[in-house]
Image (cartoon, rainbow, N blue to C red; front, side, top):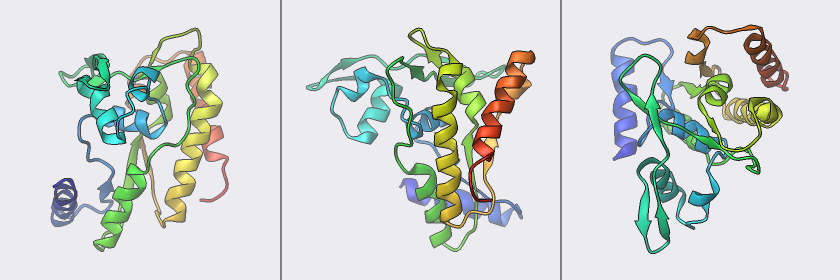
Length: 198
């Protein structure tokens, strides 16, 4: 059913005459949660349940009470000045940030197999790090290198599969940014874009 919905969304874009058709804009629950999971940002209490990747995702989104344990869902917060609520990812001090899963690649491949070249979209690294909750002593600075590496791997993986364009959504850029924020963004994107390839 999810595959049929994604195909229908792409057909809708094509019929509307959209030049750069988007993929990876489908979510079972929340786009920021999708990006967090793609980067391996899954708190230990959910990993310890020993569930499938999909069930772990929904445990984070909705909570889980069953034979494997009992955990509440991650917190929700308003998305900037809208009434949409997003799932707040949690970054733990001992968390290993790494590319986990293949959603962005799979959805690009599905569209391509159906004869449509798309522009994959993903929440940008700055917005991801800005909207996370830091549960230990580490701050966004401590995750810069690891997150940069994941985004470079995303770009390499998409280029390898034939993508000509990738869109990073950075709604956190609309906030009042100070010099430290602008410097952080510069270092983040210099690292992401320093990788080999296009």
